[in-house]
Image 1 (tube, rainbow, N blue to C red):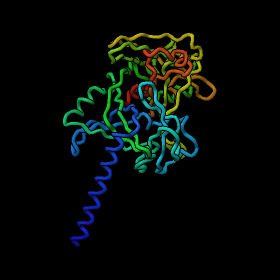
Image 2: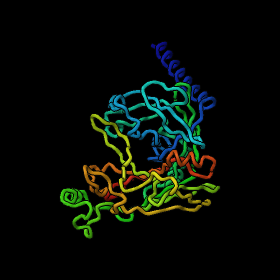
Image 3: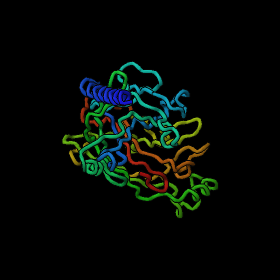
Image 4: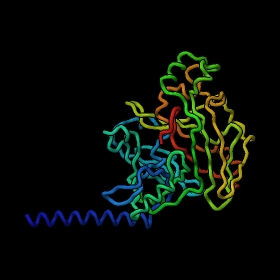
Length: 349
């Protein structure tokens, strides 16, 4: 019996040494990329301080989803990556086979018994351990709802099979803040008005605000000049709706289309210059016709849409044509930005 115990201990030590050695090799020799994240919870009293990370890549764009990927089964999945000029990676392809080029290995529907995890990709790097007390200071810089939020950009090294290891992190050069100036009314009122109101002249327009009034702000947190391209209709910002899980669809995000907003003419874009510490901000009153959305064969306010509880995010994302026309201007902020999530009646996070 003692010999068996010794063998078990030796095997365990060998496995731990192999895993540690593989991690060190990946950190030293692996492909470097940065992944943008948003921390969730800074502490675990049983393991010391750490930052729990939610990667942007884990929230799947609905355009990425093929019929094959619409499953609730646990699967190993691979995301092909491309990087911007700052080394921040974004997903270029997604599938169950290893792609060519740079890619990261993840796990789809890990712990699939929980509906919160269905349709989300985990990469095995969702915890970043730090020295005792440092997790709280990181969380303060990261920010919470109604505050300035600074994205952590994790320094990731990728192994030949796509295994990811965290080496460190840096803060994004740009911070973002979402404020709800006026919320919409409750869902019960939304249902009553959406069934009876003319969307062009809604009943009780003076009595009820169906949709929120928001303020979106972007701050230059770097030590250099930055430029934020935008238009009068704020075409640099897309509204992305979170999609919940059901038997035919995994968690994803898709863009909300505003038929009254004209964003095709790139000649109408302006470059807003931000010195270090300066802010670009604007308000969006979603009761205005500019922000009406399709509901069947008519245009309605956002607050009239069903499933508003799933929430929305404003996402700064420039069109490829604009980037190409200004490819030599290194001051333009070309990466994405994501605000906190909100719905028509209250902030969620």
